[in-house]
Amino acid sequence: MIFQEPMTSLNPVLTVGGQIAEAVAAHEGLYGRTLDDRVRTLLHEVGIPDPDQRAVEYPHQLSGGMKQRVMIAIALAGRPDLLIADEPTTALDVTIQAQVLALLKQIQEQTGMAILLITHDLGVVAQTADRVAVMYAGELVETAAARNFFALARHPYSRQLFRSLPDAAKRESRLAVIEGKVPRLDQVFSGCRFTERCELATDLCRRQSPVWDVAAERGSVRCHHWRQSAADGAPLPDAQPPSRVRQAGETLLAVADLMVHFPIRKGILQRTVGQVRAVDGVSFRLPRGRTLALVGESGCGKTTAGKAILQLIRPSAGRVVFDGSELTRLRGRALRRRRSDLQIIFQDPFSSMNPRMLVGDIVAEGLSALGAGSSAGQRPAKVAALLEQVGLDADAVDRYPHEFSGGQRQRISVARALAVNPRLLVCDEPTSALDVSVQAQVLNLLKDLQHELDLSYLFITHDISVVAYMAHEVAVMYLGRIVEQGSVDEVLQAPRHPYTEALLSAVPSVDPEGRRKVIRLQGDMPSPAHPPAGCYFHPRCPKAVAECRKCYPRVAEISDRHRVSCHLVGGAGSR
Image 1: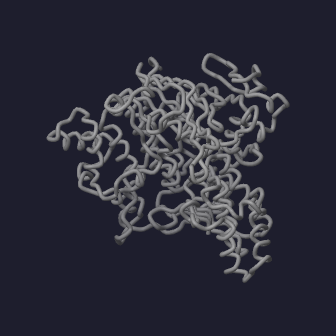
Image 2 (image 1 turned 120 degrees about the horizontal axis):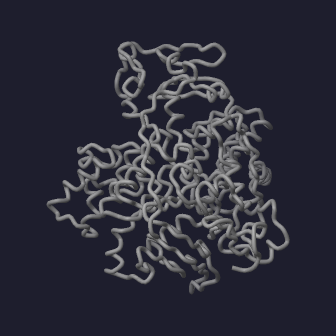
Image 3 (image 1 turned 135 degrees about the horizontal axis):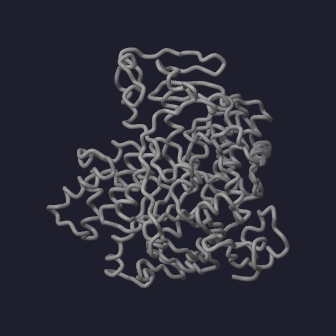
């Protein structure tokens, strides 16, 4: 089995080779040099370069993609007939995701093993699966060959999942959501388990549990009314009102040449021997009431840039001007007064909340810490109003975080951020771990709040479909620098930088017939402690020329809003 999160599945105090060796010894009884050779062979088979060196390293020294490859090596140690892959790419960016999925398919072709892929990413399913089984509330509701399923899903739940997917075509409207929530599984069901959330439900559905109906060669479905939902290929009714379009206002946030360099210290005296250039000269502008998406591979510096803008990490250099105020110069009380204007929503809502605090106290904490305009007597009413604003019941104040679903916990995080009346929200992968129906709820909520409160978003994500739906502008980061920036249509539909092209080619499509050729990037992202000379991307770029190895390219202006740093596009020279 391959688990969802490799960092929590690997032992942080054992070397990578030692952990693979445990599995090999248990299944094959090898030891000594034969065991070491088998470990290195497995590392080579899963595409990890320099297996001799990697075998003696620890998990924290590997990238997310390489950690997942180590998990695959451990799973393959027993030469399995069946590999269960539980959300193996959920936390990975699209390029690493493409590498991992291609690796699994290659190993499957070589060994003939079967793969049970557990995922909520329909694009991954379309690009990799031979058959699909849809599960709801503990039971399967539809099974079909992948080609037939994506041509026309039959169960109402399956069809509503498709309607919840974000994309550019839905940008000016709200995403369809599945109302209600999954029923508790500690009850005896008398009818269809999807009844309370189904738009086609009748009294028959409440009285009698549906049995499997074999739809000829197209698969099987468990639904009384599947023929009605699939009639003529018509989609289910969609009454979602269009969202309001807001024009760009004046600049709220201006970032110029932002740098965050972490010192590398060694020895007893902890002398500085180098710098990790996590953010290495980032510049952009974010207008009031607009969304800028910051995308790129894991480790490119997206989250560090977001934290530096909020002054949670002090920048090494550069300027961060928020509404005319230079944040990098503020200290103490002056900075604290600005805190209420800038808030952050973290990727994992559960780990960002104190599990021993009630939700009401979690939301109210910022009000008391920053003195955001509410007296102690007014705070309960303020908290209740915030929870109602994000779609939660009033009784949520007296419950703990573990009592909520993932989507509800993210709503609590949004309420906590809104409590102090911010004007800018940094959203750090807020939907990456959510299924498509819950993701649609959170994205709708963020769009509604942007229109109601005139909020600006810095949206950090690796999900390009979310970018296409949410963002007005896109900035693509690679190794601490922005390599391409422009309007969402210009960047996503006509990318000019080879790295952007590779990112977009790796995005899985829900159309099995629309499989495009993935641009395979060689190797892993270089270490930010030792960036390559010239263009940082040239060691992995399939289009690199001699000039790319000599100096970093200047910024080329493609249009008023579209800028690219690439020798193949415009003026060469040092930045």
